[in-house]
Image 1: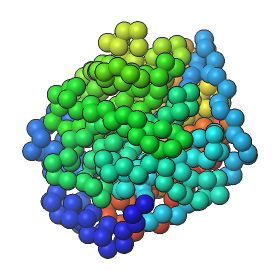
Image 2 (image 1 turned 120 degrees about the vertical axis):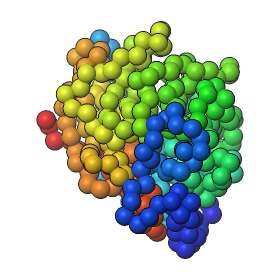
Image 3 (image 1 turned 45 degrees about the vertical axis):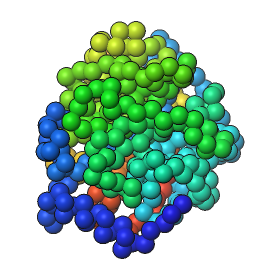
Image 4 (image 1 turned 60 degrees about the vertical axis):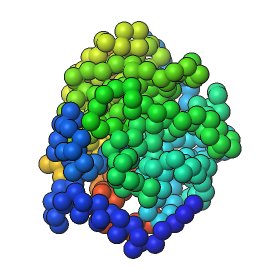
Length: 375
């Protein structure tokens, strides 16, 4: 993996801010609607991302057993890689290690339980990698590829214009398929943020800058699963998602912390989940070993509300409504998403706020076991 000196990274980050007309002390969070014309979009920079793993849970259907861990997990895994800025995470039971993505370098990286890191996928087509998902049954790893203007391969022609699903062999890291999603929906900007896979291998993908969820079958052509005005809004919108075995998706909306239940039998059936609390900065999600939903929520850069927490949500009515059953405050570490290792849930402390505000370099990142305080 190419590692750049701190001066190179800092120069690129601050050059980006200069292009965007940013002044010291101003927010880098975009203040525009996702239907804003492209010229206006080129003047904004985004923070936000999310990785999510599949699972199940509700009163009617119990979740399957999580993949067993080969060894007990530590309370924290610290790994060092200069300005890596990981965003997505998944647990690989075959190797007993985690996989993470990278906003700056692109690619997919292996992180051992001891904190050793090495590349699995190095592909020059990847600009910034976000949510990723392991499809162990088909020996695949799927990852979202986008360009928010902060990666080493960013370019004016691709900034805010890339929504691609990249698929690789889990064992070797060799490319299997690259799926361009941008042409499937007319939009001024695109941002492939997160991906989840159903039991038949179909992948479902969110676009944070256009109000759309994509569907990508194993072998067939991709299409739009659904689009809705509910997905629209200012800045970063749809983010993490999970699959439920009763035939629907739960999808998080980053900017206002709402959740949606999207039927796969009738994708036009989009319902907002009634929550006792919303979590602005809602990012990645995973089903835990109890069939409860674990949601990572960070601080929207420039926003007035900072969640900075991992919350556990429970539902007794098939996720038409949900309530908070556990919470772990993280502090200002920009927690992005979660992964399940056996009975344990781990979250990624990604430090993306440091990248988006130019506070570089950052050398250390961590994966932290979740210990909830009951609510």
